[in-house]
Image 1 (cartoon, chains in turn red, cyan):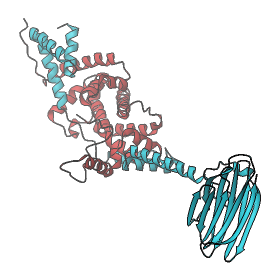
Image 2 (cartoon, rainbow over the protein chains, first blue to last red):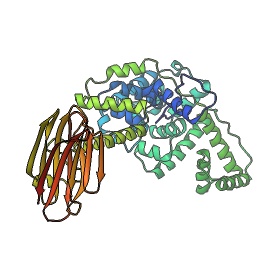
Image 3 (cartoon, rainbow over the protein chains, first blue to last red):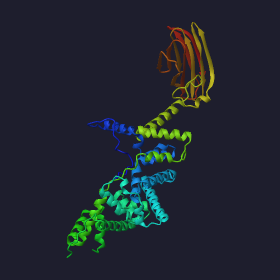
Length: 225
Length: 256
């Protein structure tokens, strides 16, 4: 599951190793960690503030934190590696341009997810409109999935996913790939939590049926008493 | 299976949201309904497959490309803002902010104390007052006598001032050898209030006895002696400057 990093990034490796800590050592240890990479240690909100003050490299850290997430959302939604790259770029450029409108009451990752989903939905709708494809044609028009190194199982899942409607696909992506709560999904898709739940249940059942149809999930004709 | 309640419980189970009681309730229901059990197993298998899907790595250069495409000078800052922002960032990274606040608080208290202390005027010849003398009384002082001495290596002057409440004597004396100054007064009328040295000046010795104050010193000295008036009746002050037991000068003045 992808990490949704906010606040301190404790993946930063320290310069020194201390086997047993006193509280005093621990304090200095934490400073060493912070000094290792100041940008990595800062919260999203501080990075945004720095960015608004003209420090572009702070936005670079935000890209570093969330590019994989945004890219994967786009990839799962459009199943086109090049388009996923373009969408990721578009999302971050728009986020940068609108950064001064960002409401700090929300989490930055929710905001960026929202933009990623919206951009992906718009892209799929545009592609469908201009190419006059239906959703299965859209799937067929996408670049070969072999461009991306994925396991056979991942490719099967992605294939089934592309046969879902885009709204249902978005729900599966946010819930199962990004591990977001109903509330967070509601904010991202601008839906009430109750609607999120009911649509997610439908999406899952549709996906299950697709997986069974393609033979990826075993369906036994059990004896019903 | 048509029971909506259990369909919801199945989905909640997949999301890990069921309580132990709800999970047990679902398990019991599934055990009794093979169709529901099959539905659950298939949903679980689908969810498990989804969970196994790994995230795809974006191209390594993606961040660089995005940074290059960002509009230039979108967000600027004035020089003072930048200076303050950089200071804040530095403090945030190098220190925990609570230490900064503690330091700033201590600094503010220190500055406040310094201002308070430095705002207290230092003594000068016009400001020589006793430590117990109330400020404002000096404005009412009037000089009643100027005494001067220039004899056998002893020079200087004594300016005697008085108000309705006090008598203040400002003394500036210089001597090559130790001298003794005695100020005598009627204890019924006057009482010793304070002694103040001019900045940088020290006394060799000061002795207070009933009805008199004796000061011994050598070299240039500048100090002030304040007596309080105990009543409104007239009195007198006697000054005697002596050296090695030899009286060099004596004065007696009246105070009212």
